[in-house]
Image (cartoon, rainbow, N blue to C red; front, side, top):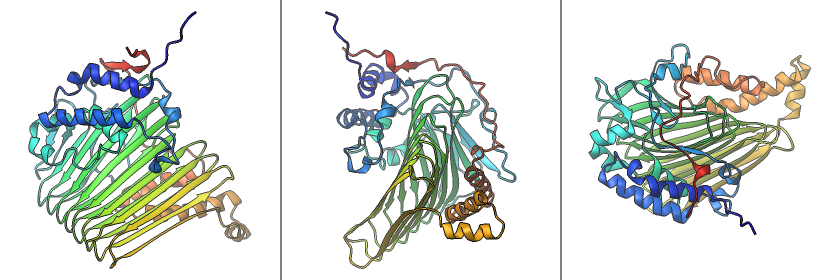
Amino acid sequence: METMTEVPTLKEKLCSVYEQNSSLISAGDLPFITELREKAFTHFKELGFPHQGLETWKGTSLDKVLSHNFGLSLTPLAEEVDAEEIFKCEIPNFETLLVTQLNGWFVHSGQPIRRFPNGMIIGSLANAMQKFPEIFEAHYGKYAKIEDNGLNALNTAFAIDGFFIYVPDNVHVDDVVQMVNVVSIPQDIFIQTRNLVVLGKNSSLKLVQCDDTIDHLHSFINTVSEVVIGENSSLDHYKLQNKDDKSTLVNNISFHLSDNSNLTSSAITLNGGLVRNNINVLIDGEYCTANINGLYLMDKNQHIDNHVFVDHIKPNSTSNELFKGILDDSSTGVFNGHVMVRKDSQHTLAYQKNRNVLLTDKAAMDSRPFLEIYADDVKCSHGATIGQLDESAIFYMRQRGIPADEARALLLYAFAGEVINQIRIPVLAERINEMVRKRLRGELSTCDDCALHCKYQNNAPCVIDLSNIQLT
């Protein structure tokens, strides 16, 4: 009688790959990072992938995603590529310092680390950890927790490269830094990428992150970013997500705020098969302000999950959350907003607002704003709505000669505008306005002025096909 061989799970395959290739994965590590990898791998073996049995993942299932046979790239493309040839964003008057990742690897032309006259440093995470060990020892792995987050643990175990940005004390960067993550490889791919952004004291930075896909194959991108904002410093951060329907994007980002620091962050999700944004804000200073915004426009069978945790551990600070969504067809969404105000965090102001419009009976949204307050002298509020367009407003506009479809688009555009207006880079806000307007009219949502070239289709020299992993 022929016996059937049990097919190993993705978790089992990944564990096998790590055990067989740990020396390759950690080849360029600082000693403490190698030790951190081992701890993270142990946690991943215990935790595995998140599932709907977890309170924070009740509304999102990864089961279908985890059934794919993903490849795993452990080394970059053999050939050097030009970032300008991979991604071109021709937004008028939008001057940026462009840095690019291709399939999780930093793209450069012989210059993995760039030092600017003002002292700012931008480059490859893998190279930066060797050149600036003191920065990494102070911040790497300090904010993205691995003890209770399986995806953070997986990333910490496997991630080799990503973006590194350092802004020294007393430096205000005038140009916008644009970080572009592009996936282009002729196979289903599972990517672990890591970013570290550190702002010193009395500094400022405007940062735009863009996620895009070229090949439209199945991809799973698990990104972990740690962002440190020093005393009296300011960060404007914008995350633009425009992935295809076969993509899964889990964006884990942890912000750490010191005294008198300011954060404005907006996640704009225009497309994506499954998108999960884990946004963690640790307010570890007094007189801080954190504005966390999100806009999501979903259709077909797309799914969006925004999970926001704001932790007020010091007094006299303010946090504001504004998330708005438009869901069409059979798309689904989750908003889970959790604000914790600790015992000694008196005089905290914390506000949450989540508003959603469902355009069909099949679209669904689960909104869970939550306040956990242990201080008594605070002002906190939260609210959530899930509804449809105002038919009386549509009727009023039609009476004045506006076609029904145009009337609906105008109402939706006005609804989305509250979030777009939070973007403090005028030319970027104008362009996102245009993209949102096209999206709401059913036109192509990708930026017409962006040319993504599929020239670099060579397989990485070490891409492990997880479908061939056999366990003993």
